[in-house]
Image 1 (cartoon, rainbow, N blue to C red):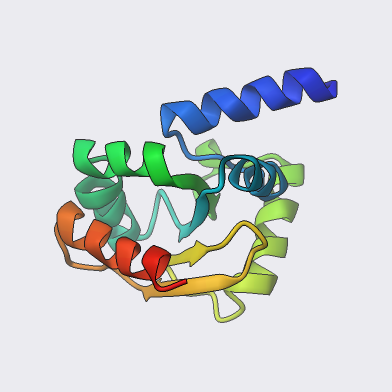
Image 2 (cartoon, rainbow, N blue to C red):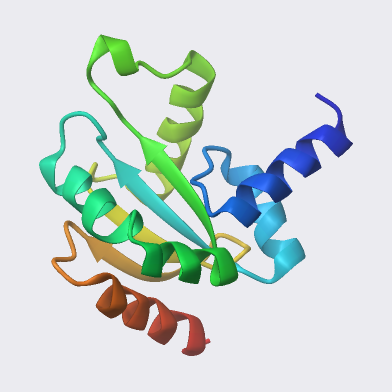
Length: 145
């Protein structure tokens, strides 16, 4: 895939508010658009708190609108079911992210990062908040810098 195609895909993912799986591309998008990165470690097919966080917060229209304007979303997923198995390349990328940002293997773990990958704020486990409260916490992290 050439640079132009890769860039267009990154822009489309960024604009749509979808979760990316390539942290390097997310960093480039965050830098180019002066955004923060929200990195979520999830066990999408076995971790009940992860599934609840996705459904209750991340899939809400309120969060999606905020994310589109302020964040680049990255999910490092660790599914267990064979039918949800990731490619070997993606598993390797997720493991590298876990080694750096989630060495204790917590799920869910959500991190607000600056474009350089520096941790600004951490949420360990299910936040048990409304999307609006989660956004307020994100804003505190963003505006504290």
